[in-house]
Image (spheres, rainbow, N blue to C red):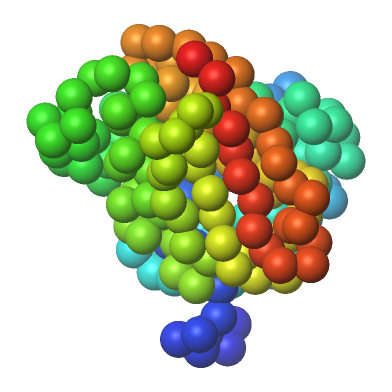
Length: 191
């Protein structure tokens, strides 16, 4: 793999490894992996957990899941990543700090989401949480390789799973009318 430019969208290898680990738990794992390039799979497997890897690989994994299991499969994989994160050593200090700072209120816990994005993603747009009715998780300047429906479904699943992890619940609605053109998308959180 060629070295990534500092300006290219990238994810920590740990996130991509987690995605594939959750894919491997699916009964359809072989079919999903069959839709991914062997070189991408090999490079993810061989990367150190803190290494930056191409941002397009995240949506590529989701696309492979969607091709076999539809959007429901993408939702399941993304939500399971959030559910499993508290048990992972890499995320335990972050989660403890987030709960200490923001508390366990589901909507308040969303305040940590922009910080988590900076921890796992680089050059993938900006994320902010707006506390107006309803609470909104807004992404701006999402780069074109990520402007895919599967990315939206994955983010929606992550936000809903965070609410559940915090002991609450809710539904998230998409406002994506300018997403394709501008890379701006709002996730409206209803609790």
